[in-house]
Amino acid sequence: MTKKVMIVDDSSVVRQQVTSVLAEAGFGVVEASDGQEGLERLKSEEIALVLCDINMPRMNGLDMLERASIEHKDVPFLMLTTEGRPALLARAKALGAKGWVVKPFVPDLLVATVRKLTT
Amino acid sequence: MGSPATDSLNRLVSRAIVDVFAGCQVRLVEAVVFSILPLPEVDPRTGSPTVGAVIPFSGNDVSGSLFLGSTFDLVGESRPREVARRPLVRSASTDWVIARDWVGELANRILGRVKNRMLEIDFGAGMPSALSGHAITLARPEQPSTRIFTFEANKSPVWAWVNARWSSERLSMAPSGAAVAEGAAVLF
Image 1 (cartoon, rainbow over the protein chains, first blue to last red):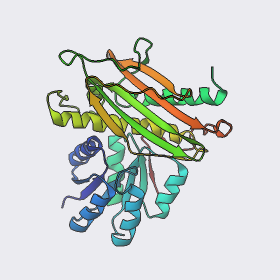
Image 2: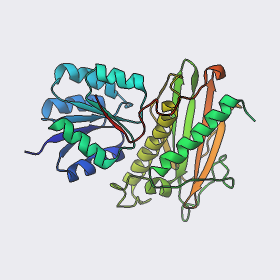
Image 3: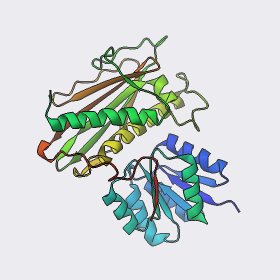
Image 4: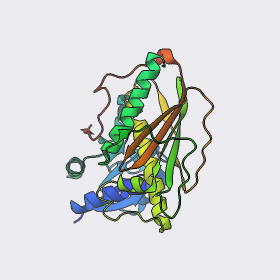
């Protein structure tokens, strides 16, 4: 069965890029443009992993992670952001994130990381 | 001639701009021939119009904004190769949305690189506001601290300005390697 990954990012170009890379690697991909939409999608779709930006309108990625850690605690989160500050990584880890990728991502590395977290 | 802190910040921003575009397979060189203000009016029949984005940032020790602008064509060319197989077309309204989206992301990445190298200065970034058109006029920021950067690639200009106010005594650069590097993946 195809595993479904959700990309949550306010940039449509980034979503399209991630979708292209993961689809080529055999994953199904669902898109959401902010944390609010991402949470709604989590209720209606069976998601194996959430790839989540941080700086987004309406609801940012850390707030989405915090909400999801209560309502969808079995779904792993991999943060995908321009930020690389240790304090921010520590906060995401404390909220339950499983990993962190700093943009621009390396396609092969992203696929390998997603595979590891969905196996 | 600025203070050592200002000079460091200028170098940092300049490097971040070049690196972000290099990551998009676009090699920038510093340009002196392009004036940033006023933005040149473009002949809609021949020239590539302007696309730009501004991001505000603020914190206890620093606040201001970053503007990034370039041409519609260069912004389109700088998209990731997985999505750039089809070139953007000026006559398609949806392609303008894509260009504005991507220039906002580029500005976000430049600011992200700067933040990752200034770990002792805590500041947050707002959402990018993007604009586009053939005859854009931008008001020059009044602050003398505004630093303007001009580059070119593929005969297209790239403009950036940083309008920042900060506590210069607190401005120090993070040692390299302190933040997670761009492109790296970390598993917890």
